[in-house]
Amino acid sequence: VSDTLTWRAGGCHCGAVRFEVALSQHVEAQSCNCSMCRKVGFVHVIVPESRFRITAGADRLTEYTFNTRVAKHLFCSVCGVKSFYRPRSNPDGWSVNANCLDDLAGLDMAVEPFDGQNWEQNAASLAHLSEESA
Amino acid sequence: MSRLHGQCHCGAVRVEIEGVAAADLPLRACQCGFCRRHGAVSTSHPDATITFTSARLTHYRFGQRRSDFLICAACGCYVGAAAQIDGGWYAILNVRGVDLPGFDGRHAEPMTYDDETPDERAARRKTRWSPADLTELQPSA
Image (cartoon, rainbow over all chains, first blue to last red; front, side):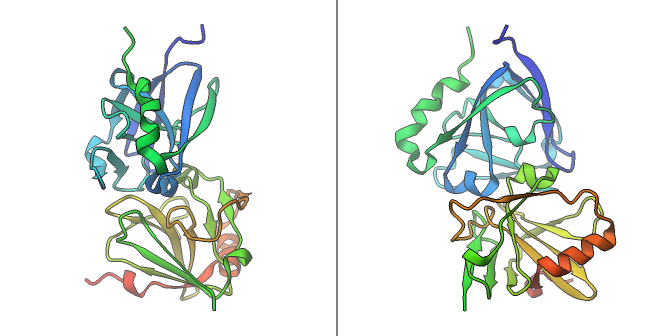
């Protein structure tokens, strides 16, 4: 069944930060053009709180905030990789970086552009991605 | 003289590449696990000079451990890499990480360097990387 969730692992480059995320076979991902995402090449997979867990290295994360300071940008203090963060669009969930998944095998991922340069007009379209299923 | 400026997201790290116009600079997409996770695309040219200005850089080494991958300690942006070869410094810039102007719409050539020996790697970098000014990066201690 295509909507069965499977826990998949990922992490930063040096191995200090590790996470797991529960994904269905079909994944809707976003490539954002805002000033932050452009610089770190982040490919967003946004999930509800219950579908994400940090398995190692929470103490190695550095937090960076700017502008409204709602988004909590988190990167590994050793290798700089941003594996996941709390997005401003979905502060009740997580955004995982598809580039940091160990294995994309079996995933049918569609990466759509997201116009984060006009964030206020577009953020609502992402809100449903962090809703817990009933 | 062409001179391009860039910086990390928070502005703590500033970079400059001087001597070659953007249109004549190559754009490379290294396929290694580090560059992929940082979404990095790189540029350098032996006729251009690269300067890093910062007091807040994290130096990260991996693999053959002969180059420093430079990351802003405040905002996490990977800005570029530097290596000391035969007494001189050579560097590349992460075009995305510093938002270097003049590369929009350009195709980045996929690159794989996995099979290089340390000597081959040093020779390639000396040929393709840019002479670099890392004066600001020397530890004060």
